[in-house]
Structures are given as C-alpha cells and as structure tokens.
Image 1 (tube, rainbow, N blue to C red):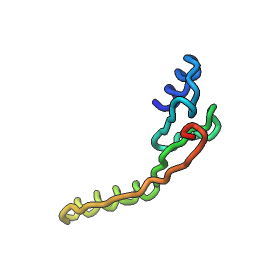
Image 2: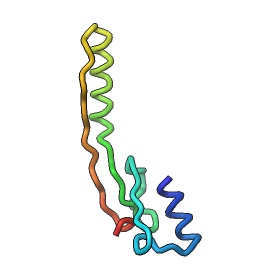
Image 3: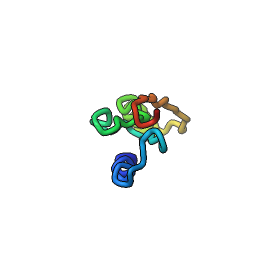
Amino acid sequence: MALGLLAAARDLGVDVPGDLAVVGYDDTAGAGFFSPPLTTLGQPFDELGRLCLEALLEGLGGAAGRSHSISPTLRVRRSSG
C-alpha cells in the first residue's frame, strides 16, 4: 500500500516527504531502493515464527495459552523526512 501511495504521489506531483510523509510496514524487500526510499517498520520474522511454533506445540501438549509480544524496528529512510 505504501509503495502504491509513493507512486500515486509522484504521479500527482506531491512532494514526499515535503508535503506528505509515508511509512510502510513489514520492511518490504527493496524498500530502501524505491524513490524516495521507504521508511518502514520491520518485524523480526524469525522470532515471530519461533514464538508461533512454540505456542502451537505448547497448545498441542495441553498447556494454557500465554501472551507474547515482539518489537518492530523502525527503519527511517527518506520517505518520512
């Protein structure tokens, strides 16, 4: 969605980040190579996958569910100023 917004802004002559700041999510591969490079939040997918598998195995073993949290990483690039 963020990459589509960058393209639409460019087509409409909207200055990114001067008139509009754009931030994406999931740190799409190559986000740093778009014009302008896309600021994005990256998720630790390895950690997320490990936690999901642990929760699945614990649940199959009859354990009660528990809460987990992960912290995304902000990768500031030129699309946000």
